Image 1 (cartoon, rainbow, N blue to C red):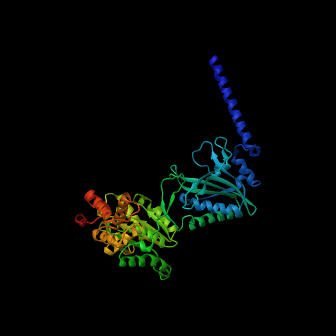
Image 2: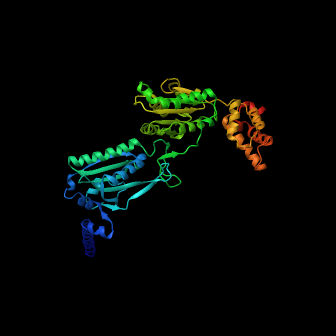
Image 3: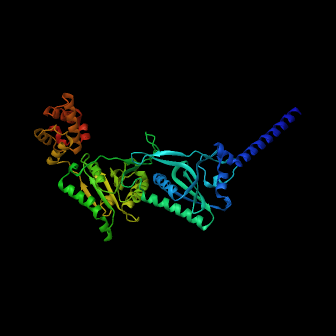
Length: 486
């Protein structure tokens, strides 16, 4: 009997506690006005109910659009512009559910849930690096109670995606079930859509996609904006015929593209840079990025070719653009040398992007390789994908003279020493001469920081680069086979 008595007392205590919890929840949900005055946590459902009054929340319709997560900078700028001029903000706050790992939706906010209510909380921001002097502050999650043209509506921003990975930003507009309410929602989405299409935060910059959310600075990116070194035309040391070919097929083509398009010609163009390592292919790309005014440069590294589809979407969005893929032979080598279906799928994707069924776009494809003989014939031997191959040869005597002057510190290299550099570097790459000038300067500094370079400095640098490191070191530095006898 004593056992039954204790059990009955436990049941009664549970009922009392449940009653008190429900009563407390009811009091909270009906006292949001007092909460607003004392600054404590508020439930969102009563706020929405009050905002739309006298229209009942059952007469609210919710429209949704999702935009790419990487374009949240332009979305944030558009929101700031709209809410600062055309639309009146009645209330703004962050949103959080007590027992949910996912961001709540506008429907969750409208429902007066007893078990998992939605609360208003301080809004959360993150600082986004878009390549400007100051990062841009972007909202992670928020709800605006708004009014325009005497119509009350609400806009909710939240991250979205699948399997716990954020891949987009979701906007939901709650508006009265009327023609005017529908027009306000559509006009709001059209302005966001136009902002993403303009891509003002990234257009004309040098970009790559990042899979990591944040950098060591703590700033978020998603899209990384690069600052390439300034390479002037006179700093591109190539044979005259190579420079002419480069100028006609890239810079002049860009200038004449509009007229060519009016004549029915394609606006896309594929260029292949090929030649030994260290001959200036990447150096020239830096020059082109600065020369193509108004173009967005998109850099695809070897480890990111799996993101090719997303890269090409970005290139079309921010056109005119230049898509740079270095060491293209890693994904576009001959099919008979491939070892898996995945490699062929990636190759086919590249071929379709360069000359497939998608609409024409103002895109330069600049591909580089040290092994042109390894490329798949469907890429290298089919017009419409590669329109011009440009060879980057090892520098001749005149080229080596210009390179020595380019990379040596001013005033530290006399004409006699330049002649010796030219004589003793036959068959080397431009990268070799650049390192030779640095190594010679280091020997000069260790001897006497203020003196010009001497023959002894040059001898010491060549000895270290060509002989002390062995044949492997010569290959790494781009030295010719005949350098072992120099």
